[in-house]
Amino acid sequence: MSSIYDLSLISYLFHLTMCDSLVKYYTSMVRQKPKSQLAISWCLENGYEKHAEKYAHPKIYAAIIQERKKKKERKKEKKKEEKKEEKKEEKKQKSKVKEIKKAMKSLNVNG
Image (cartoon, rainbow, N blue to C red; front, side):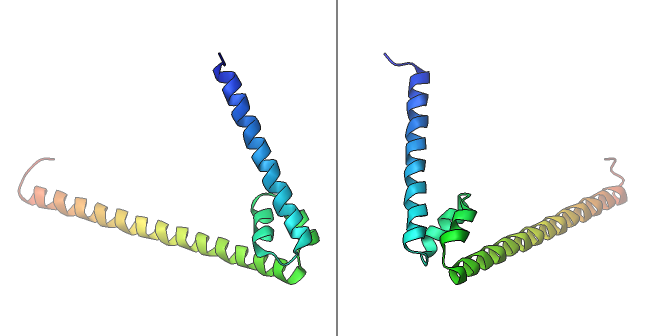
């Protein structure tokens, strides 16, 4: 009978094996096919920037880096817009509460 620790160890080892396989696959793909956008992107997303920079085609690498920067900026802008919307909504709610309080006061209702 196996314990929960044995199962978690097996799961962890399986995860490591899968990760190792992916690392080997994509890093070797970058070396074999320096123009592979998929392999370069995978390396960048998973912490193998130096490997991608070293083996990838310079123009494609630069284009992917540029696209990632633009994506990051768009994400930042979207968050800013969402915060603005939240603040607007909060202001609207506060003004509605004030209106309700005024109406209650004009009707001489304590609240």
